[in-house]
Length: 316
Image (cartoon, rainbow, N blue to C red; front, side):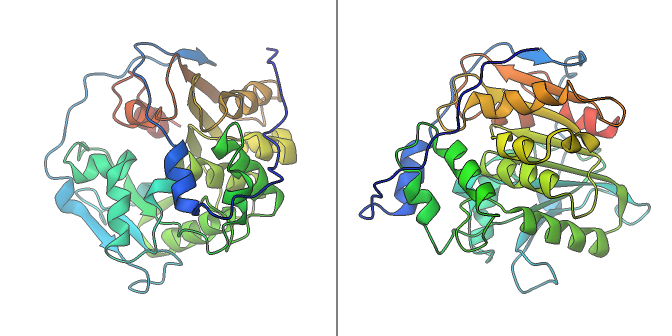
């Protein structure tokens, strides 16, 4: 399948030193329109069954601030009922830029505002899902040069992805979760928790997806069984590694009206991966929400759009 391509947003020559990095990000990250349907590429997946909310998921959520464990990052932890009886699948959630923080107890509260941690915190996570869920926190970068350089880019998040990848995911300057952070956290999680190392699943929204694609491109940590990047840009990873990314099953989601992460960043890697030999390529699929801006994750994670990513993960 052919797809129209265009270059990544270019680097901005004139930096706006007078604007704080956080203000730039907050001004550009916008809400999303609701869309009733989605376009899918890849094998057909049946709509999700009625979402049944479990009882008491919030009571099983624990903040693990930086320095209180051997983890390289502070994180939120959810352990399902019966944890410890047998190894469980591990689901790691990588947050967007607005949930960044220093990993302290107060900083980790930012993680509860969106995505999987929000569902758990609001008792909207069925407790019969068997996953151990961990959500590490990336800190706001000390060096805001990438943020400032991208201030006037057409798609701010896609510019973040391009520059962060091009610079090798520098720890002090990356606005998004880095490939190294994902690698080190996964290594910690597999060692510290009673999880099945052959069933590691990672999902990331927006900036978290940048870290997820970067990790897949680096290929130097625990292998992933499945990945769900949402509203993010995987083109730098594809340009770097091509078909080698296909060792992990991937289901990508994007809104076709996204003004923060170019829709091409969600569609092109999957369309390209579909052309790779299978095997060794694992299954790939793409869901595009018509008329939806940057927040394509809420309907994806709460299953209100009818795509049961959790059943898909468990079926891999």
